[in-house]
Length: 163
Image (cartoon, rainbow, N blue to C red):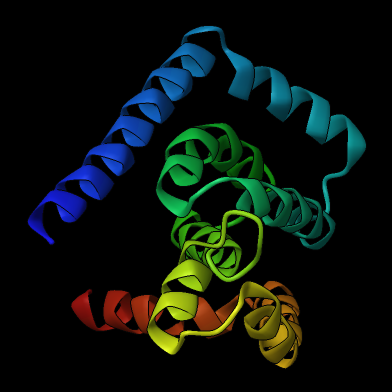
């Protein structure tokens, strides 16, 4: 068990190391600044921009694990969404939620493989059983995008009381 854990941890850390190098490379080459300029030409509406970013993150979550995706995508997308007035804390929560959906979707869905092993079921059986939950997660995602106050009410409350 220790050897399997060490191998899995090593693989995750290796992915994280490569993701960090890619994020550094993109930042040094000013990719986020270029993306900000191009996206601002498309839309200045925060709701529409968040829908576009959510679609992109869902696609990324389907093919990449959460941690490397977060390390690569956060430095690129945060300047884009903050340029139209989106709260960075809200965006961080939203990004973690969206990429978390990727943990439950094939082909990479790390949690699916764990669920298959624990439940001793096939991937097809588990994915079929998860479809209603996926639909629920997508509805919650749209609600979170439409009503950002749901995410930020507690930090806003503590900020008001702290002043």
